[in-house]
Amino acid sequence: MLKIKAFIEKGNNIKIVLIVTFLLSVILRTVLGIACGQMNVFYDELLHWNLSKSVFYHLGSNFRNDILSYKEILYSIVISGSHIFGNTETQYYIAVGINSVLMSSVIFPVYFMSSRFLNNKYRAGIIAFISVMLPEMFYTTKILQENLFYPMTIWFFYIFIVLILKEQYRIRNVLLLGGYVFLVSLCKQMALNIFAGVILYYILQFLFFDKGNRKKCFISLLYFVTMFLVLKVSYDILFNIVNGIAKESSAEVTIIAILQNLLDSYLLSRLIYPALTYLLMSALYFGFFTLFLPLSIGKDLNKEERNLFIIIGTILISTITVICLRIVPAENLDEMTARFHFIYMFFLIIPLLILFFSIYDKIRKVKQNRRIIFLSFTYILLLNYISIMPAEGSTIDCVGANYIKYLFNSEMMVNTLYMLIITGISICLYLLYKKKIKLFYSVILAGLLLSGVISNLYTYIYLYNDKQDSINKKEDALILNEYFENRKDFDWNSLLVISDRNTSDAKLESFLKRPDYYYSKTEDFTGYIKEHPGESFSGLNLYSFNHQFYDIKAAYPEYILTNKWISINGYDKVDLDLSRYYLYSRNKEAMN
Image (cartoon, rainbow, N blue to C red; front, side, top):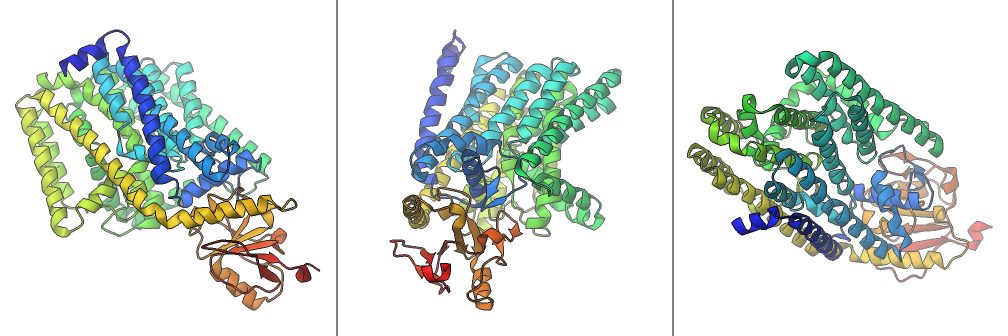
């Protein structure tokens, strides 16, 4: 270990290590993504992937031939270049490679901001290495915004550490922060939590932590909010004009729903348990001591450490608040098991680790044993009142929980998990009590690294075994692409896809060449042709992303694709070698 430390701290060796680690991470994640992940498309992935096709083909925000009022399309723009290459399968491989580059790139800003904050190359190198070993790095197999959102949030903390912590009231820095948070908001709606977190940060500075600079604090807050809102409103107006949209955006719908729920006192009382669950589970997945150790010595933190801890806390609180007000009521309200959306906050582990290393030397000097013991046993007590096993959906929402659900899948094993947590916390408390700080840190870091490696490995194997189910859908899509490309007069918006439910054919649709086809449910379609035999489909329920609509342009689609045999007046089955689907074309008699 000493030799490794000496090598890293010598000259530019650390830069070589960073570059080599980055390249290895990109190669490994691209190979694993191609081998395991490209078949496993689900509904959100289809949204981002089809929007990337729309960007590439200059179709605006087209999804299933409907213009969506969905404005967080920065990730779709980034991966849209993949559609230049080969067929849709090759394009998907290129997108996986882009994901791997994006996610692996965090190693550079993580190292440089850690090195600047800690003034220690070795410790900064450890944090940088952990940043590309987290369980959530598995997202490189998915067409998910997290592949861009993670590096963008890390750059947010880079700006905060390098600029704001040094001169938090300098107007130039505040304007840059506001502009950058706006840029992050173009990637994912959850970036609004960062915006709310920064506002709460300045409010806390104003009220409690920097009373001597209240005027500067208020002015800085005003500049930050103004900068963000001017850019955001201008972008929204321009987006609506370009795409011809008059309806509310998905982000506006979310904000309205949150405000309405805030006024529902009965609902708020039912959200206390989910909020507590999220707080306790988040602390557990962050490594517990990375959060509670700085909290236990809060009075001994210097100004920069304190302010970094505050911004981490305000973003965490705003994120949990939004999850509870918006997501929990729609998913598992009044249920004991929560669908734990760690996907929205996992990036906070990096600034927490920076702070965790920053107080390394303080722990030896500060007498805080009673405080950390009190916090630890309070945490353990509260932990017994929540369900530690996440609900279904953990494969995406919390990759680490996916492995936990597999390993602790019985009542006895759940109790075993509680016992392991108590034992782990107790061992770490003992090491702190004995001032064995180096061993204490080694245990925490080893736990984080092992959780990343094991969870990623399990998830990759799980996906590899599961992907066979969608191979036929992909092959059918590639056959359809080739068939339609050979028809010179064919327009994709003359294709109507029929399936059992809104999300079931995402794996097929992701491999269709274009995004501008129509989509309807089997139940709606069969009921319609029964009630209106031989008539146009102008009154048929069509579906985009969580939106139902009608379109007169779909009155007489040239082709209809179904996943089961259906007799359709005016349409003949096309003799095409499809294994899971049936393609029908409008016959000449009907056209006349």
